[in-house]
Image (cartoon, rainbow, N blue to C red; front, side, top):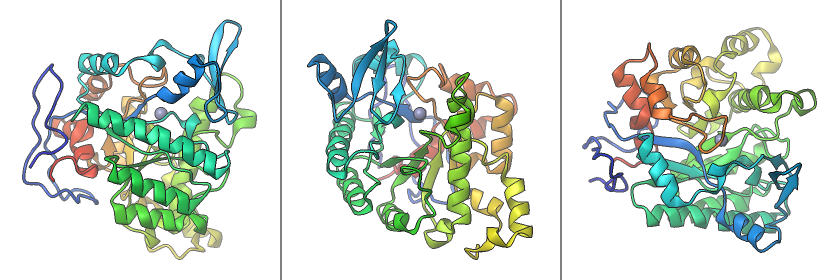
Length: 367
Ligand SMILES: [Zn+2]
């Protein structure tokens, strides 16, 4: 029976297809026919942070700083901004905006500058709990309109696992992870227990770039975002593949922001490296890097219909999900319309991207 998708926005009534299994990891096995629009890449600025600002104090070290008349969020890990109007909207304003652009459900996650991996673990856990409980509150307050992904203190894997378990028992569907943990890639064996736990919990894991590795040479022209972020995602995809993580823990639900960055465009070169270089084979991969790509998921946020075509050609329409990066200026203003205006994507594939895949992966379609 339908569960979290029962209560839809006032602008229309949508239905989910019935009778489909909810364990749909893997591709092409399930006909995803749903017209619910689910945005899996949408952020919420934490209420606790704004409360601290109003109290003229900091929130786990994060402050609102004013420079040249513009406001910036400074988490000591990153200065983000300038703050835009949408960063402070109420949940009612958010719902009205979602209705106006045809988004039925947002899968809420925090902006990446609140990962807090730089904090001592107890502080990071304290912040995570406040962030995650705020998302759980939104899910409960507006049934069917929100789902959510947790922030977990991955600088301490057992603590991160415990928080993932707690939050999923509290209604969240998985976690949003940075593309690295204080510079460590996910092929580091210390992260393997987290992926095993994510698998056992059926968690949806969303990788979001932050503090990109090429920061020194991308400080100008906003290149840290426009070039650094897609590079970050490509490194993370490659580390998981070449590190053998997908062999050790198959059937993970791993999704990457911004179409996976440069991962798909670069996969041919990774395949060639795997063919000709011994150091690419040290983890005894069972298949070529491009084969592992088919096990991964990507949001559609490429800002290029041609890039979306290439993403769909490289993986499949079962691997791509609606993602807007709401409420930030680098996101889509009207994500549903953008997908529906893709000239080379069939209506059936558009429906998978707009919500069918997300409903399946988040287990929203059946109890
Ligand atoms: Zn984002």
